[in-house]
Every structure is written in C-alpha cells, then in structure tokens.
Image (tube, rainbow, N blue to C red; front, side):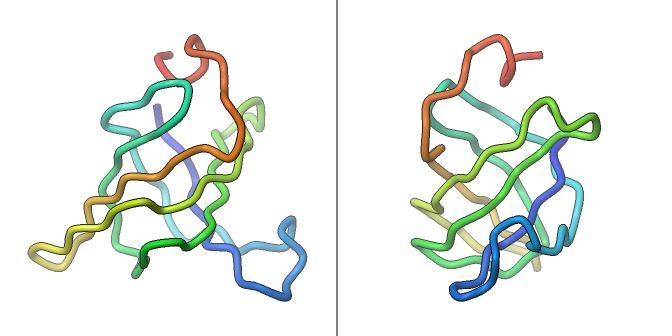
Length: 89
C-alpha cells in the first residue's frame, strides 16, 4: 500500500503536518508497518500516514530505524490497531 508520510513536530497541530514524501508499506500488520524512506527519522518520532483517498489516515510511532545508502528502513507501530484488510490491500 502506498502512503503519504508526515513527521509530526511537537507543538504543531497534528493535522498541519507536512507530507514530505510518498512511501510504500513493504510489510504491515494491524499493529505495525515497515517501509523505506528518504525522510530523516529517529526512534520515537510520531508519524502520520495516509493513503491517496484519505480512507487510511493514522498515526504511528517509530520503533526502529536503519540507515543505509542514503535511505532509512523504518519500523513504526500504529497508535491504534487498524483493520488487516486496510493494510493488506
């Protein structure tokens, strides 16, 4: 599934997060997602992920990051469980 990615900055209204890039969820469950991105992220960062039609719009917290060749491979845990059919479509 393709998502738009926004890193939420403390003190700024979450809905105003700037979507910095489009990413592909390489693997996802109802609780977490793995993806590769160009955005500089750190453990604990809060993200907003949404699909193009807005039917999937969730927050997640970064639980692991591995940097390699100018990209980051990220594991993030959804703040709330999401239905499996959404993340697998």
